[in-house]
Image (cartoon, rainbow, N blue to C red):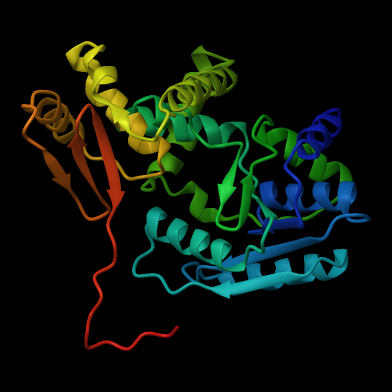
Amino acid sequence: MGFIKNLRATIDCYPQHSGFLIAYSGGADSTALLHLVHSLYAKNIAIRAIHINHGIHKDSDKWQEHCQRSCQQLGVPLVVEQAQLKDSSENSCRQARYGFFKQHLNKYEILLTAHHAQDQAETVLLKLLRGAGVKGLAGIDALKKFNHGFIARPLLTLQPQELQDYLHKKQIKWIEDDSNDDNSYKRNFIRNQIIPALQNTFPNAINNITRSAKNSRQSLDLLQYLCDFQGKALPISKLQQLPQELQPTLLYHWLTYKSLPTADKVTLTQICHDFINAKVDRHPHYKNNYYQLFRWQDAIYCIKNFEVINPTASYNW
């Protein structure tokens, strides 16, 4: 189990924090994460776990009971939430989970999820098939700010078989979710059909895809660094220095750097055209549901939209 030393080195480099909140489904990956983190840090760091009962599988309540027993045996406090889903789609389940994660994450706490190397490869392939750019191809973040704390994926460089080998060695039981065999879910199709086919011809497919994700992440970090303009406005001169086809890309990454949702490429191209070519006495303007862009002199400025106050509504102060 040589990876344990590297895992500890990874976690030890995390920002100063108040403890860990572990996303625990009861499956092999999150079970390995829970036991690894508990064995490494339980003596000196506060550890909690959170389980989301989606209620869409016939065994959902049994899985919840398994997680409760496992955490009780370890002495790890467990938060359990019951999701109320509008449908059983991957996106609805994910939104419900992360909504509860945000709700329960304490200030300066780090949410740990059990995403591993194959999850990273699946994510990159899904993004690639959707025509993503460098942001999508960077895949899953290893560490980023999340609500009042952080979210981290310390297992991102590990293969799922390494985690199962650890569980077998320690004789730790986990849940097998038969819905993972349902290839009507896109991620399951990638996992069960596409990746095995790739590995037959390219045995190092997962490692190579995750390395590409890491390279894309570095490129994305550089782009975001370059978008940190003095004064926080986007100089028109910076856009004009670029070839026309790259101007929307700079605008896209500037908005991403400011943690704002971006428009489609056609809209971004039109914004660049209108703002760059405006006469001196004109002040082009763009507005969506989240923010407004306007040009003043030689720069593009962004203002977030304010909530419209209803004069007849009551507000708590």
